[in-house]
Structures are given as C-alpha cells and as structure tokens.
Image 1 (cartoon, rainbow, N blue to C red):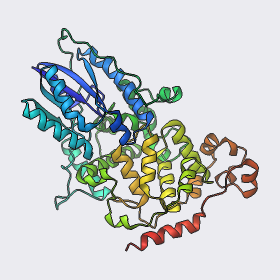
Image 2 (cartoon, one colour):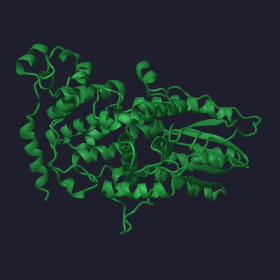
Image 3 (cartoon, one colour):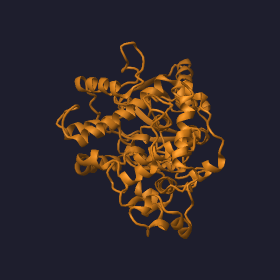
Length: 471
C-alpha cells in the first residue's frame, strides 16, 4: 500500500496528523500542489509565496531524512486539482490520501470535489485536524450556534483545553527507503512571481527549525513581558510567529503547549505575559472557527449584514495616499512603509491604520483587506478578515462603531519618543518627541511632509453618523 500526505498550509513534520497517519503503515510519499493562478486570485503576496517556496525547499530536505520523497505538481487553479490529484494517485499507485482540513470556502470546495472523484476510483481521502487548537464546530453556544463574541468563546475553549488538551504529535520515525523514488527539485521561483529581497529572506528564514527556534526564544526571553511590551512597535515585544503559523511551520498546539509549559500547566492563572499571549492564540482560533461556521466571510461579506448599507466613500485619491504612506499622519505613514518594505506590520499598528482607513477616510474595509493580503508575508484569510472587520465595526465582536482610534493619541501612547516613526520616516527624524506625532504646518513644509488629507475630528463624526444611521 502506498499512502500520500498532501501538504498544504502545514509545512512541518512535528504535530502533523496527516503525515503521521500516512506513515503509520506502508510506504508514504508527500505532495505539494503549487496553484499560482489561485494564489493570485486570493491576492497572496510575493513575500508569502516566496516564504512558502523556501519552506518547501526546507521541507523536502527534512522529508528526505525520513525517506519520504516530496513531489511537486503545478496546477494553476484549485478547480483543476481533483483531476490532477487523481492522475497523480494512479501514476504512483496511491491507495489513501491524507490531508489536514482547511476552512475557507474555496479550500473546502476543492477538497469535497477531490474526495468525491477519488472515491469514484476506489481511493480513500482522509481529512485530519491539524490547523487549530480545537476542531471548528466543536465549540458552540448552548443554542448550538457558533460564538460571535470572543470572551465566552475563549472561556469555552479554555475549559475544553483544560480537561482534554491536545498533545502535539512528535515527528514520525523514518520509513524504509523506497527504491526508484527521488524528490523533485523544489522550484525557487515561478513565472510571474518574484523573490523577496535578501533582507526579507534573512529576516524570515523559512523552515520548521527556524519556527521552533523563534518560539523557544520568545518563550524563554520575551513572553514574561509580553503584556507590557506587545503594543510598542519600536521594540521586539511580540512573538513574530505569524508567518510560521500561516504556513504551518509551527502549529497552534505547539505554541499553546509551549506556553503551558512555562505557565506550569495553568490556563487561567499564572504569569500575565503568558496568559495574554495565550489569549491572542485564542483570538486566532476565534477567527478560524468563524471562517468555518460562516462561509460568507470567504466571499467578501461582513459578519454583520446590516453594515452592507454603510455608504463607503469613493475616494481613490485618499486610498492611494493611504497605500503610498502619504496621509500626513506620521504613525499611519510609518506603519504603511513598514508593511510595503518588509511584508509585515506590528499588530497594534494594523488596528490603527485599518481604523484610519475605514473610519477617518470612510473607505470600504475590503479594499484595505486586499491591500494587506497583497503585501503581507503572514497573510491568512481568517486572521486578516477578522482583524479588518473588527476595525471596521462590521464583524463578530468588533469595535463599536463609535469607537474610533485617534492615530495621534495612539502614536503618543505607543511610540512616545517617536523611535518607530523616526525609523520609517527619517525625513521627520529631526523633530522633537512631541512634534513628531503631528508636525506643525511650518515643519511639514520645510521637511516636504504632506498635510493631513482629512481632519481627524470631523472625519470621526462623519463615520459615527454613517454607522448610526444603520440603526
């Protein structure tokens, strides 16, 4: 019997249920399907694709040590995957296909079609749970519906994880070396896609080893101060694990149990830094479960349908100013430069720039969500959509519509000495710690820095009126 492990967003050996099942008995081979046109339709960034391709190179080396060949198929669209997968299985005498479940609408359609076609030809396809702490659909309210409020969802998750925690699986043992099989060379580039810069590649090494090392360093050195430091973008106070979670180089369960180990097994009490980070893991879980429970989220629809009636502004010049870091608000412009130049943005600033776009500029959140996906190395539909809908007040348990961040106040609070702004807007580096957050007209002119494109006070009122009319 030859079994297949179909890798997707789970490019690791440890805590990889599909790989473990495929290697449990009989010979196993591995497969990854490159779908460049599908990735382009999903607005996946060049940085994200480059990260995946580098991760695949590392994975092929790791699998070779287990005597598991990694094969690569180029199938442009997911609608073409079922037939290509069937052809591959026939070519390699595959009797079973193992994969870890994914929760987006297109992913589920792809898998349902693959399951049906393979079954028609006597090939069994088995889905496993490997992408979240708990199986989506297993955490529901008393009315048997998906939680739409985070706090009770997190409480229910903690209770389940306390009484029946999922222990991460170890990496499988090597299998007997197969004769006649060699791993295909993993391409380092694709037509139409360009590699990330050397600086980005060195900043984000793409391997399971790098992910686990980053997790270890964070929990050893920074997690105790996480609650205090996480909101300050000029210091390395976060885990910076999001690209690794998005590509599956590390699992949510591995992160959760690493935190548990440092918190003596407690999920409700203990070190505040650890508990705060565990809470952030549950926010990620929340958005993954919502994506599974509400397919409309994969189709550009708001969680709160009444917000479809918001009269978003058609303001292409303002949107371009936001994209090009020319809003005249230093913290917003600095954050946008960080995104475009590095493929990553600090989480506090993601909220600041998203709320500025959706509230102060009153521009449709879907434009911002897409721009982020086009640039983020950690772009993940559930988290990106959840974050944008939270800021836009259109999602589950989102910020109340009348809560509008003042980006100047956020800047003064979380970048008090202007260190982050000075790094990304060096043209403002000579300004005082006070003025750098909102330069005077004289300084703006002298430094060739633009005026604010909207008045923060009046634009805030405009947003509140636009949302309050929905009621």
